[in-house]
Length: 425
Image 1 (spheres, helix red, strand yellow):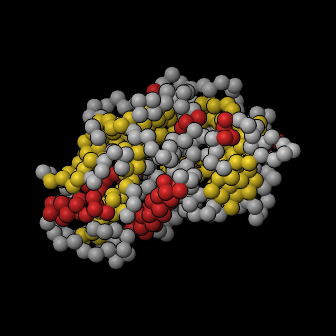
Image 2: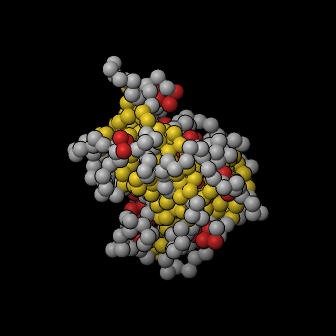
Image 3: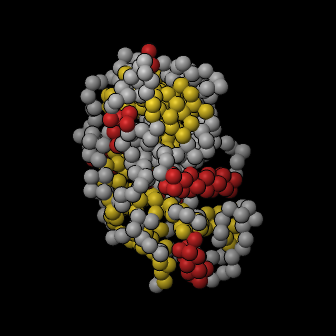
């Protein structure tokens, strides 16, 4: 699965109550970058440049699989080793059992490995798979239910009425099992617990591909009906937000739900969410990018870019990117150098005394000012732009979103941005 934010989302699920319980202001959970020292995947032997290139390769893989979803109208997720965007710590069942799973904004289904689950049908996860028979609140979902029919692929057998799902990902990884319900309980970053009974998830009995320990499954955070965000939408007032700290920060990022997600600081700008297929993705309209008095115009802007916290880089359609690169070069006024790794399209010598210009991304109704930390990064003696060309779709990645509170209002269908020191959030 994969890096993108490569964050660990600390969340706990259990079944301690019968109705959702949360503070009047909502709740928040911590997000920990997958490559931070407090991540279970932290590799101290990797340099920051090696991590950046690894994340860039994951971003490219994610871009390709997003395109395959759009082209094929199929549910596929950019799954690369260790999965997607985040890791989540979670518990299933009564009594609650603690697991860690991948969180993926590019897919919808929540699933976890369940017994019976023997290799090679299942992969080692570092702890026993979830035993549904040990949970007093576990239930199977019938095949004729709306939830079952919301799946892209399912089947029913003649002798049982269980909803048997099959969910595949872009790298040919897949999970197969029984669509089920149990209680999900979040461990608020303030120490309180918020429980959501009868949440829908897949009990996976055949899970193969690039999944590996310590991940026990995956949590979909996309816009489809079976995602976590969609399932709890009414309890969180149809809104969530996040605030992503810079890579160098020692503190965690935050994911906020409900009233806590509302941007209350000045300087916020808002742009409409555009409804397109597949509904998993969050589409925005980017009209152009400016540096000073020069603007690179997008060819067509209606729903032309996906905002994704799971993709590290920002991708722009090739001709749009070329126009932007031209005005970046003019603004910097120094000859660029070639990136030997071939990862980045525009780089400069890190020892060259250059001033990285502020860029303004002109979303529909919202001018977003990006600072140098959002657009350039050191890479083995080079200073490289974190915006790259794409032959297909455009993605507004997580470096560009750092130090903004980004609020999704799913009722008003808007995304809002407010400049924020996220380490103080």
